[in-house]
Amino acid sequence: MIYSYKGSLKQMNYIEINEGLNMDSIVINATIDTPKVICSDDGTLSIFGRSLIENPIDFYKPILDWVKHINVENIEIIIRLEYMNTSSSMQIYNLLEQAKKNQWKKSVMVKWFYDVNDEDGIELGKEFESMLEMPFQFYNFLDL
Image 1 (cartoon, one colour):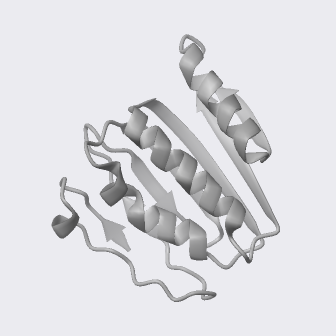
Image 2 (cartoon, rainbow, N blue to C red):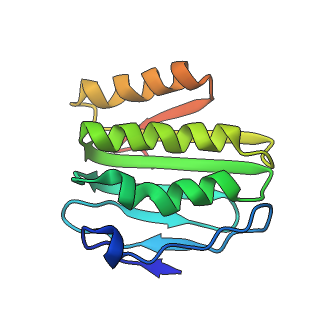
């Protein structure tokens, strides 16, 4: 499924969730203020770009639903955000927390990319790792 977000809940189509079933892939294309999001049916979730969303709850809802209900053994989450505002960071935390609570998964791995000149970016990732007690791998943006 491909979604485009234009700033309001009514303008974004949401996925239907059936607990325990393999979820469809989701692609949300990036805008100037929203990240590109790819949720693959193999359990890989990638978030790239910038997250400067006024109401990130609406934007992240289908992603939270996907990570909560994806029926796979291993979930891999790749966060490569150049910048995120505070309300977006709260939704990223919620997303990671839902991955940890997913009843079908055996493991969750987070790959957290950061700008070497942005101390806040690495600190936020390390704080999330500590709070959630989940394994994170840290990479600077130059690593691929």
